[in-house]
Image 1 (cartoon, rainbow, N blue to C red):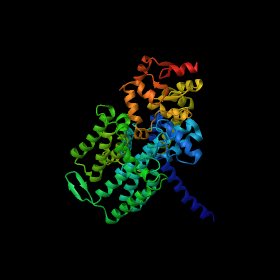
Image 2 (tube, one colour):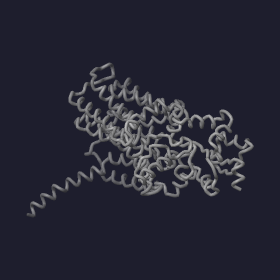
Image 3 (spheres, rainbow, N blue to C red):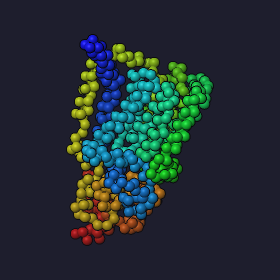
Image 4 (cartoon, rainbow, N blue to C red):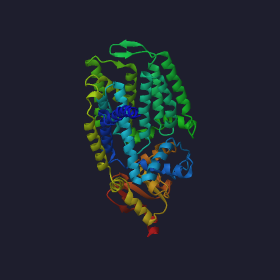
Length: 503
C-alpha cells in the first residue's frame, strides 16, 4: 500500500512542477508585462466623452429590462427611431459601474485593454511560431490601439476581432473544427459593436484566398484542403445567420453600412472619423509599419502570403480613411510582422526557462499594477478636469429654466449627470445626422449665418459651451445674451429674459 502511494506521489509531483513552470514561464511573464503596459496606457483615460451616454443607456436597459428603440435623451430629434446596436456592451459597462463605481469602470477598461494586448500576443505567437517575436507583434497592436483605448463598446468589438483571427488560424493550421467557434462569436459580437461587419469581411478574405495556388515572386498562396474550405464556408454561412440573433432585427445587421454610406457629416466632423494625417505621429507610424513589411519581403526575400496582403490592404485603407481604424490596422499588421521576423530571434525553449526569475518578475509586475492603479479620487479628478462638472452643478443649483444648447462633447456627461435636462446634441452622431441636427449644429458652431436663427428656432434659453469655442466669443456680443457662469473650461450664457426671471 505504501509503495502504491509513493508511486502516485511521484506521478502527481511532476504534474505540479509542469503546472508551476507554465504559470511562471517566460511567455506568461511577457503577457503580464503587456498588462502593465495596458494599465499604464489607460490609467489617465477614464473620462471619454462617449462613456457617459453608454453608461446611461446601460443603466436604462439594466433597470427597465427593455432596450430603447427611440431617442430618449434629446429634445431636438423628437424621439426619432434609434438603432441601439451596442446594447450588450452598454449593459456590461453599466454592470462594472454598478459593482464598483468609478473604480469598477477603470477595472473594466484595464481588463479589456489587457485582454486585447494579451490575446494579440497569443495570436502573434501562434502565427509566427516564436513567443519572443510574438511580443513584438503585440507591441505593434499596442502602438495603434492607443488611438481607441477607452471605456467604449469598441474595446469588446476589437477583442472579438483578435479572437476571430485566432480561431481562423487554429482552424487552418490545426483542426477545421475550430471554425465552429465563429458563429457563437458573431452571435455575441453583433450585439456588442458594429465591427462585426469587418469580421465578416475578414472571413470572406480568408475564404476567397483559400482557392488560390500560385507564386508570384515573394507573393505566395497555397490552396487549402477541400474539407477545410468547406468547413470555413459553412462557418461563414452560420455566422451570417447568427447575426440575426439580436433584439433589433435586420436594422442591427445593416447598421455598419448605414454608418459608412449615410452619415457623411458625422464622418467629416467627428475627429476620430476623419482621414489619417500622414504628417502626424500615428500617420508616420502607419507609413513606417507598411514600409517595414515590404522592405522585409523585398530585402530578405521573405514570402508574403496572399491573405496577408489582402488583410494588410484592408487595414491600411481603413486607417487612411478613418483615423480610428488604426486600431484595426494594428491587429491585422501585428501577426504579419511577427511571422516575417520569426527567424530573427531564437524561439522560446521551456528547457532554458528560469521559472523562479519569471515568478519574481511576474510578482513585481502585479504589485506594480496594484500600485499604479488610479484611486477613486484620481478618477474623480479626471472627470472634473475633462467634463463640465462645476457648470452642471451651477445649472442644478440655479434651476436654469427652458431648453439648453450644449457642446457636442458635453452631451454624454449631461445625459448621465443631469438626465432631467434633455440635451441638444451628444455623441450619438447617427441619430442627429438622420434628423438634420448635426448639420445645423456644425453650421452654428462654425459661425455660418445669424446665431439667432438656431437659438430662436429651438427656443433655447441657455447655452453650455467650451470656454475656447468660437461661439463663446460671439454670444457676449448679442444684446439678449449674458454670461451667467464661467470656469477654466466651460461657460454658460443665458437669455436676458430668462436671466431676469431667474433673479
